[in-house]
Amino acid sequence: MKRQGILIIISGFAGVGKGTLVKRLVQKYDRYALSISMTTRAPRPGEENGREYFFVTKDEFERQIKENGLIEYASYCGNYYGTPRAYVEEQMAQGKDIILEIEIQGAMKVKERFPNAVLIYVLPPSAAELEGRLRGRATETEEKIAERLSRAAAESEGLEQYDYVIVNDDLDECECELHGILCAAHFTPGQNISFINELRNDLKKFQKGETTV
Ligand code: 5GP
Image 1 (cartoon, protein in one colour):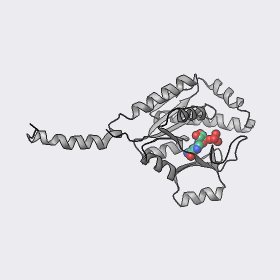
Image 2: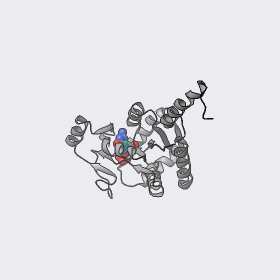
Image 3: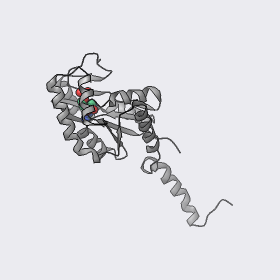
C-alpha cells in the first residue's frame, strides 16, 4: 500500500504554542513539511521573511489572490493571511505530510476543497493560562492582546468543526499525541482509496468464480 501524504491543518488560539509544537514535529520527523504562509502583517522582532512568513504588501497579496496563487486566505485582526499553493502541491505530490498552521476560516475552506484533510485544534489548559502565555510573549501591545483574546472566545464557537482537539499543557506529551493522531490518519479508508479500489477490482474475479488454482 503506497503511502499518500496527508494535508494537516493545525489551528489554535494566539499564544497557545502551536508554532512551537509544529516546529518540533517538523524537526523530529522527515515525513512532515511545513507550509510558510504569506501575510500583510508586520514582522515581529526576531521574525524573518521567508522563515516565519512571507511578509508582503496588501497590493502584492491581492495580486496573489487574483492569480490564484493561494489555496486559501483569510483576514485576521486586520491583516491578510494566506497559503501559497505551489509548495503545498509540490510536497503532497512527493508524499509528504504537509502542515498548514492556519486560523479557522481558512481551515474550513481547505476542508471543502480537500475532504481528507485532518483538522486539529490546539487548546490551552485554561483561559487564564492562555492570557498568561500571550502576555509572556511580550511582543504585542495591550490592545493587540485584548483583540486576540476576544478573537479566541469567538473561535471557540467553531471547535466542533475540527476532527481532533488536543491540550497543550506538557509540550512533550502534546507533541506525542499530535504525532499519534497524524500516524493514525494515514489509515482511514478515504486516505487509501486508490489501494481499496484496486483491491476491489481484483476481488471481483472471485465473484465470477475465477481463482488462481
Ligand atoms: P500570527 O499573526 O499570530 O502569526 O497569526 C495569526 C493567525 O493567523 C493565527 O491563528 C495563524 O494560525 C493564522 N494564519 C497564519 N497563516 C495563515 C494562513 O496562511 N491562512 C490563514 N487562513 N490563517 C493563517
